[in-house]
Image 1: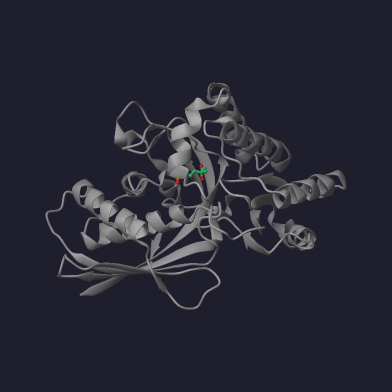
Image 2: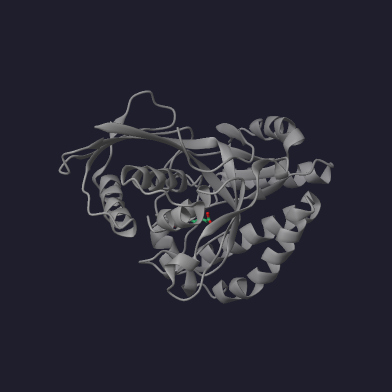
Length: 333
Ligand code: PMV
């Protein structure tokens, strides 16, 4: 027996991936752009065992001290990913595993805990099968976990996930477009609920094309991404921020209008958005984006993070805040 330990960050998408052109291969309809989060990290320890019949996992959730056994569905996804990884890595070995996973943030609440977990598992499995993959290939493996955004937690810093072409799995990979220290910005996560979301993103992706606005967003995205990349390279938050907010609103408009609809915003979400708009009117630059959950990510200059955090933390509905800076991707510990 030996143990493999991995740390991997969650990531926040500035341009979201929503809808899959192939759900089996987790291939997206569009490029997405993200940043790895320094304080939203999953730690995975995996005991690699000779007996392949042992498949166990315990999870220590945010805010708790003691681990709980993984639910049947959680363990099944890991076991399925093990089989995918074995085929992808071309190994005929078989091993058992005992996994201990811990999150530094609420899981399944729109902070992409599946991204940090499955990117960590991709690296852990590659290591256990003794295959050294360069980050691009490793990102493809992470994508094949079924949590597509996991591929963006493999490379460092600021990351672009390429749509790829047709059903060519290897063409849809994530790569770093800049190291973490390229741009001193922060993502202040505003936790208004740490309850688990009711509809998984797997189900949500399936419904995306049924929105009458889906096609309009797809048509607009190449220009949005190109403009956001330019603003990013110029470290121009005043241009980048409004484009990112508009993209987040478009993404939620799709979810609210797809069949069946998905409403993630709560009253507390809107309280936070209003405060951000007020702050901006007063001269404090800060911009929002929201994933598939009711919590809000506030993007601001790194030097403004504590001010922004303090101000939004004062809203009664806010339960917690997590200040993140750009971070490296998945790493062996
Ligand atoms: O990573 P998945 O396949 O579970 O999908 C989640 C996608 C969003 O987090 C909602 C958006 C994104 O691009 O991160």
